[in-house]
Image: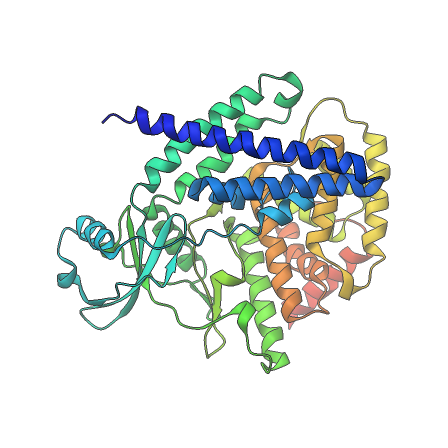
Length: 451
């Protein structure tokens, strides 16, 4: 009942870490100003900030590690050097004891472990900052994975959330910093972490994904056993297969090409058709079975796009894949938030240079992630901010493109996006750019439709 001593000590520990890291950062910054010159100075400072953030978050533990991982999905807010450091955060922690696993499972199910499972492995097969996973068998022989929430993690996240939002409110007292909406962004970050401490949300996400992909025989999500799941445990089908980034070197090129197509089409379907997106998709969350079927899991972080956001996202992607610089500037004027007065003519010039640079590259060198990163760098410069929900989807698309590139290096992801979008644009009666890319996409989409 008396929580304030623990809260005070936690705050004191956080304060000590912040002060120590601040001193180290100050010394590092001084060294950079003394010994690094020119354009290298900006990159060195950004790298130092990212490294310092990563070290401090690792020191502060589970909630802050998760916070850093969520922050790494926001290239609209942070420089590439900071993003690269935050992506290196690992939330693999030592597993908690089986005694606590057993008591949590039995409390959630309301019956002894032995009444539900014929066997339950005491050693966790995976342990992260929020939960850990154990392999087990049901009484009827079905093999399952049981995800168990870490004891006290929800309370810890709530305590850290109060501290972080309090800190953001202090930052917002300065008018210049308030323009960047530190409270709103902090709220977004901590809410995303808090949702992952209720496994019922993840169970609901799995059910929705399985319904959305019911007609896709080459993609599946694990089946959840609702009667054996709750707030603190999630029981689901145990999935066997090879992770996408661990495929054997001798895998046939045609199989890799087919898998790359499956990954891309799955993500396009989530983003443009369903408006329900797996927001934590990476190679470690996908396995390939012997028959070539792709299984996607770890669906705790997913985003439902409301119709207005879906329209914005479709329009933005259209501009990137096949639009003109004017189309992109008009999109920014129409949909996005501005902080202060925008010099639209200067922005138009930079967007035009940006478009020419990427359109001049050959297919093998096109990178969706690089394009988005540079686009957001321009946005940060002119203080134009995209809608937060769109960012999660862009990061998911970047990940899918990266996996596709790994499997099929010569594929033109922009052409694939444009072709997928064309029927959707026509169905929604949206403006179609008068560009060579748009015409090519229209011809390919028509050819596929009549095949």
